[in-house]
Every structure is written in structure tokens, then in C-alpha cells.
Length: 86
Image 1 (cartoon, rainbow, N blue to C red):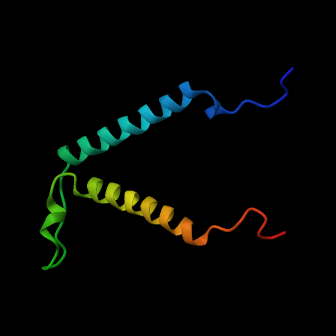
Image 2 (spheres, rainbow, N blue to C red):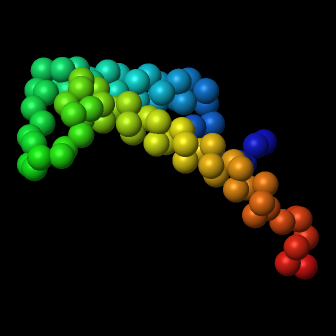
């Protein structure tokens, strides 16, 4: 008899559902940016690219990708042997 506790994300079906929910939220937020696209310019010198449709979504996506790529490279430098503290 298996006494190991089952968790929510042990079943691939639940993981797929969560991914679908995340994609749906992304589409809804991008659609909201299309419908309610109002950016205020507070001072002269504000970058005009900030007024583009979907700029903040693209900016956030690129920032997250760069964070992951940077972290994978940092892992090569910071990683220690498994028995390092023994």
C-alpha cells in the first residue's frame, strides 16, 4: 500500500490546467491593454516606446527570460559539490 501523500501538481492534468489558466490570464491582460491603453506622460523625456501596445508585457517577458538565462550561467560559477559542507 502506498502511504505517500499525493500533491496537487503530481498529476499532469492539473499542471496542464494551471498552464492554460496562466495563458488565459496573459491573453486577458493583453486584451485589457488594448481596450484601456492610457499611459500618462509625467515629464518630457519619457521614452516614446512606452506608449506602444503591449510594451509592458513584452518588457516583462524579456526581463524574465534574461533573469532565467543569467541564473543558469551564475549556477555554473556558484555551484558546489554535493558534499561541500561535510
